[in-house]
Amino acid sequence: MSARRTRHGAGVLAVGVVLLVLAFVVPENRVLLLNAFLAYGALVVGLDLLVGDLRMMPAGHAAFFGAGGYATVLLYQKAGLPLPVAGVLAVLIVGLLAALIGLPAVGRSAGFSFAIITFAFGELLIQLIANVPGFFGGSSGLTIDWGVGSDMPFDFSVYRYFTLWLVVVLVVVMLVVVLVRNSHLGLRMKAVRADENGTRGLGFNPTTYKGIAFVLASMLAGLVGVLWAPMNGFISPDTLGVNQSILLLGMLIIGGVGRITGALVGVALLVTLPALFDMDPVLRTVLVGGLLAVVALLQPSGIVGGLATLWTRLRRPKNPPPADGPVDATLEPAGAGR
Image: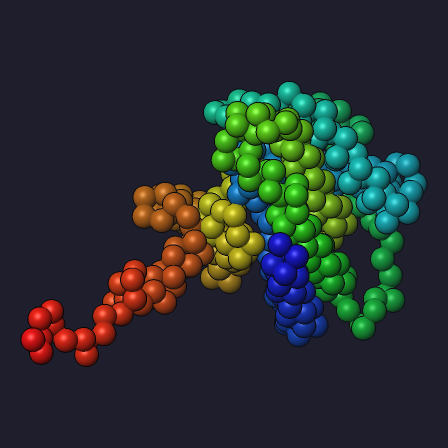
């Protein structure tokens, strides 16, 4: 397990180096697109802890992303805290919210109850924001002016400055997922996924491990929200909506559940490509639905899972030797020489 963890960790760091180079060389008119890829990549990779490792399908994951953004803005502008301190506290607040709703939710991960509870949480936050406009900004959201000046490092624009931080966040999220999956916690999560009732007979409570994964994935989403709000200069209820949550699930399922590369491929297909080709939002919705249908019918393991299966088949020898080893053709037939 240690060798595998080291190998996967080295792969994550290599991806981080490539993304760091892109942060310096990508044209200015593509910086926002790269930022969107990095942010959604971190969101979907973190979400895969629930979907890939435990088969839990949250319908309100974007709520924790939005909650991280709102908490950051409120702590910075209304409480007067420095932005880094506000960000750290925002992630902790998201973790607390996840723990509060996680206790009743994770025990019902079989069926639709878990999805409904997480969906209801997101809708509750949206209604709270809409009905307390004096504090949360209502349907228009909140703007944030974090006092950035012209002293950006390396003569960077504001958005490219956030690119560096988003690269760090994505690498951190990927490393967390790798470490969890290659730990005793990850092994027990996989055991819960395979046979939840059987794990109780082994002496540990599956609800505990589902709860840990739920809180961890939610905090990772909140961490992305901490950067998303100041980068865009505002945060609105649309960030928390069910449409965002469904989009995140769609990216993961299309790319390939249970694989970091699958999550990133899904984000590239549904975020990067539509933006590169200036695709109409309606057409993007059609693209998401069409790809989901094709993947569900033809390749349930997703694009990356399908490619991995194909690669395994191509590497398999066409005429494998018999189980007892190759036959020596020089042996004389029985009775020869008599």
